[in-house]
Amino acid sequence: MRHNAAVKRTVLAILLASLAAAPAYGASKKDVDSAKGKISSIEEEKKKTEQAIKELETLKGYGNLGKDAGLPA
Figure 1 (cartoon, rainbow, N blue to C red):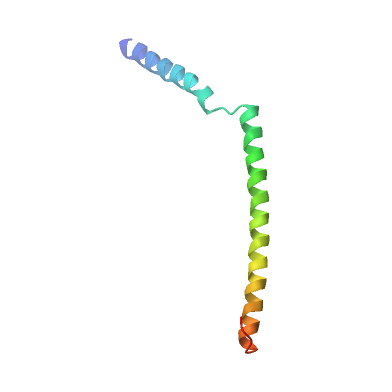
Figure 2: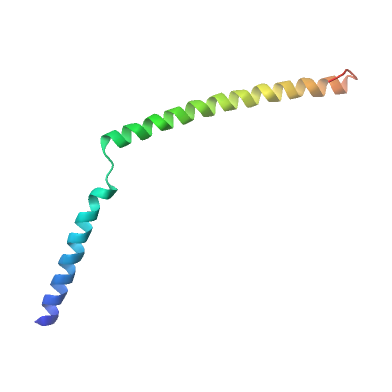
């Protein structure tokens, strides 16, 4: 009997501890909305960066063209 009661107390303690910790893992609607906003901002910045890279590659191509043609770069 003592063993059975000890097991029940242990299981109950683990259950209560996990229930107490559960709210710490939950995200509120405000947190989710904030994260979505950050994602949108980062995606927009990524698009701008990719466009800047394309423009730089184009300019780099013009520079190589000048070297190939014997013109000053």
